[in-house]
Image 1 (spheres, protein in one colour):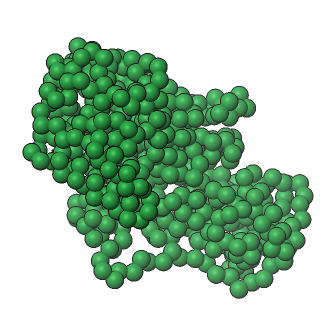
Image 2: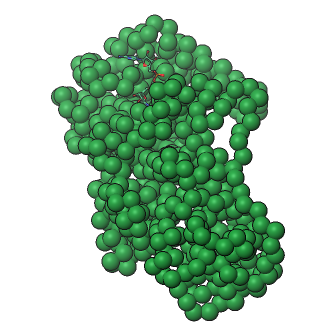
Length: 505
Ligand code: NAI
């Protein structure tokens, strides 16, 4: 099946933030769009709002006046639900309540003909459940846009148990024709993005609860080492802690309390205090007028190092070697167990063990563990964790070496898998379980995380590039360190490692 023709009339029910955005997207793509809301005047107001916003784009030279006028002329406020009778696709974006949504779709079945495709923009309700009492449940699917809909590229096309695959294909093609990046997903809690993204927030929240580092330092590491657009604290401040905490609780409940999704007491306390983030003026950070964002903490070394020794394979951290050489450091390479020696310090990529444990197990003194960087060639900051009894001169040499390569160095307490490696390993593990359970394909999971939450790499491709054996080791060590099911490696990860394959085979 191909995309709906632009002659097909679309209806959007619910003229709030999402409904208005979706209506704008469909109208910009050339469809005539009816907008309906049960609050009198709301649909007309939403169309005025779209007109104003497009007007600003015209003023900034980003849109032609003709384009604006044509889009707005295609938007119509509907007064009654009966007015939607001849629509080819009806997208619901009303209040997030199962019974209210079910009632609406039952009414629509009485009004529309059998060819009309019904779609819900729900982010947390089951499509199977919304469709369950319809006469034709096969024609109901999820069409999950992200906020703001005109800006965010991702659309999750969600199939419930009864959904017709041909209609999923039609909505997929239609979303593409609307300039979006659609992905297919099964109706499981959180679909792709709201499920796979949970560890991004959860691991930073846990690290701050354990006093591994402060919020600005962890945020800076996720941005400047990990390559994420924002750290977890600044991002949840932006989303709103009430919203982010509610999504976590809903996913946690939907998975029957699986501790991988355990909500954070730190975040709950913010919600309880009304510190909801930017919108309330205070979250992890203050947004009061004139408030200064606290700076990340960094180590500074006065030492000068001119050479180091790389013993064996540093794994993905081999990316450090060209960077050191470019800065004139002599790098001697010889066989060994994946260690980098400078002065009396020994550096190694974290494998998920704490430095104290690894130092004891491998008989190493002055051990400094190095975190993952999204790209060692470009990252500007790097986290380290050290044994507690590290000699000051050895620490200074290790830091000086990384500084020489151009990194700002932030020290975390001796925490398993530090911050970027732990976050990426857990994102990949969640993505692997979603793939194992047939929620979506590997390509769609990765695309969803890049287009829906702007991750620098899809978690599965990222894990492939780090090496699945290393990711498995990190998760096993995290699980052993915490003694918690939360870090259990996905069966699919173990299988791929045993097969010697990757997630994208
Ligand atoms: P909103 O509260 O801004 O808008 C909802 C609109 O629906 C209101 O204008 C309300 O008057 C209207 N409405 C409520 N019940 C109605 C009914 N029975 N018939 C007609 N109109 C009705 O909500 P928002 O944020 O736009 O969310 C709408 C839906 O989109 C929800 O299902 C939500 O879970 C989902 N969603 C929200 C996202 C977000 O970031 N806000 C992101 C993705 C999905």
